[in-house]
Image (cartoon, rainbow, N blue to C red):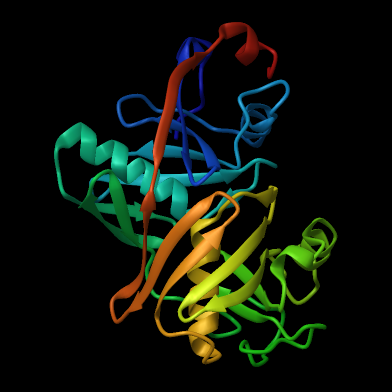
Length: 280
C-alpha cells in the first residue's frame, strides 16, 4: 500500500461489526488505498479513546472477490480471523447479491456461502497439524503437548492451544491465557481455548486471543477446537460450539473446516481528522 497522506486520512470511513460478540472495525479500502500502521490499529482498538475492537479488518482488492487483512488490537498482524471473515462475507454478499464468494487472505483462499436467513458459512481451509506448520518451537506430537494439561496444538492460519477440561467455567482463563500465549513452545504466540465436552458433538468453549485477551467468541479458535476434539476422539467432525457470545456450527470436511453462524453490522461511521492528527 502507498504511504497514507494527510488528505487520505480525512473522514476515514469504517464499519463496526461483530460475530457473536467477537467485534471488529472494518475498513473498506477497495476504492482508496488505506495504510494501516500498528499505531493506528492500536489507537482504533482502544475501547476508551478509540472505537474498540478485537480485530481490525481491511477489505482490499485481490485475485478473488476481495482480499482481507487482519490486525489484533495490539497492532500485530493475524493471517486469519474467522468471525471477521464471516461478517465481511455477509456485507459483500448483501452488497453484490452473490450467494457465494471467493476471498483471499494471508492464510490462503477462502470460500463463503449465504446459508439463508442472514446466516453465513465460511470455509477456513484445512487445519495445520504438523509442528512446523502451526508453528511450534521444535518437533513434537501436536495431539498432546508437553504442557501441564496436555493441550492440543492446531494451526488455522494462526496458532492455537486447546485444553480439554471438566469445567470450562471453573478455569481462570485470565491467568492461564497470557501464560500460554507466551509459552516458549509457541514462537509466534498462540490463541488459547478451554473446552468442555457437554454432549454428543457439543462443546462449551472459552477463548483467550493472542494480542487481544479474553473475547466473547473466536471463529478460528472454534475451528481449531473442533479439529482437536475430533482428533482426540472426543467428538465427531460436525459439532456445535457454545461460546460466551453465542453458538457456531463447525464441520471438518474433506475440503476444509466450515464455520457457520450469525453476524451483525452494528453501525458505520467516520474517523475525525482530530483523531487521525493525534496519531502523527
